[in-house]
Length: 114
Image (tube, rainbow, N blue to C red; front, side, top):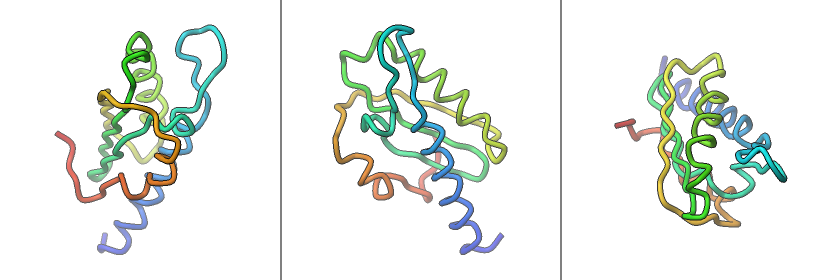
């Protein structure tokens, strides 16, 4: 695949990942479901071929839900047909109202997982 096709494929895959993570989660099983994207909890999305790493930037008060959020995010991303390996990394962070607006700046197609 040439560079232009690879960039287009990566952009389409990144958009698909954002959309599946935009769908509401109910991490606690009680209360309202939230969108990780709309809550500004998605950090970097790193692509390398069919391998994907997503960083969840969770504030400390979300730590009881980190495992369930990471598991559900991994399940959703892994279900995409273009993805063969998914890694979800939880990093300390704070939700940011404008993080979704900066999503394209925070993703890095040249970065590698690991």
